[in-house]
Length: 301
Image (cartoon, rainbow, N blue to C red; front, side, top):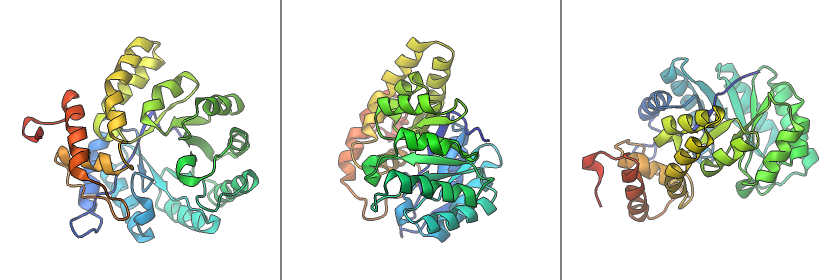
């Protein structure tokens, strides 16, 4: 129903000094990402700090990012919720904006059983039958794992077309691949597991690191697809320190720090997300320097 490509960037939300959304920087960053390896943009997901955004802020972000990319990339709206009715309303509104898809997170905090999870996602899909949906399984944040058998049932619904799998469990990914048709896409939700997931049937990655190395991620995935596994492995190993550095504390604190080191005025994270940024910078700088991600005047200690 839709092909979102290989590298989907879970885009940060830039903030101004007063904490308001910086839509101008969001536009510029979106255009930059699309020019540097991003096939699709996930707007207002975990990395976009969706829990601290109002719906009005989210819809304006959807609009400006769509405008900035001018049809060069697909825009996927993070409109999931732990309330089925709220998720339906938000997704319907995003659909009316002409976006290309929606990312639907497993309901958090209320920990529905598998039957409830199935009914939740089915209800959203049926309410927006022309909008492709990507399931988002991240049990470390939601407290509940969307099981392969449930994903397989949901994959039978025509507009549920993919899953972002962030359980960190390659056995689970293998089982999802066994139980779903090949046209159902499996995306890694962890940059460090993208290459291993390709080996068990993944299509690509919904990435944080692609803010910085989108072109290299494209090269890695293409090398694997071309049977050049050694070349793909070398790229993975080269990028691995960056993958780890970007998760030294809660995402998106490190990636925003990395973008600021490159000169992007993305601001800080909204509370309650906060940490020692000087410590994070000191961890990021040598890793980014090794990958030539810092200009000479940015390589400060």
